Image 1 (cartoon, helix red, strand yellow):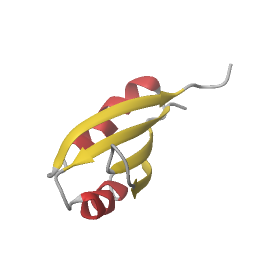
Image 2: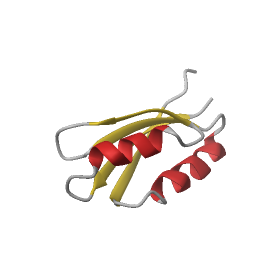
Image 3: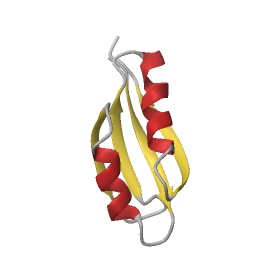
Image 4: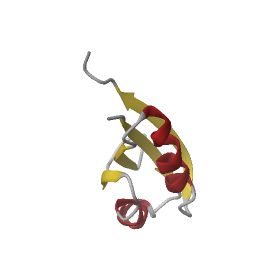
Length: 77
């Protein structure tokens, strides 16, 4: 199972709305608006390493997102 955190920067004042939209996307486990250099942090599940890309692509299509950074969670050995 491949999982990752997606750190998201949004347009000013849109973090809560964007987090709500992201939570509804397939493959998204959680999405929370936060305070700091990023506005939303989401955890995603792609089932396989190659499965993360479609989930990230869906997130990036949400209007109001200005930048994303993916941090893959290592799988146990």
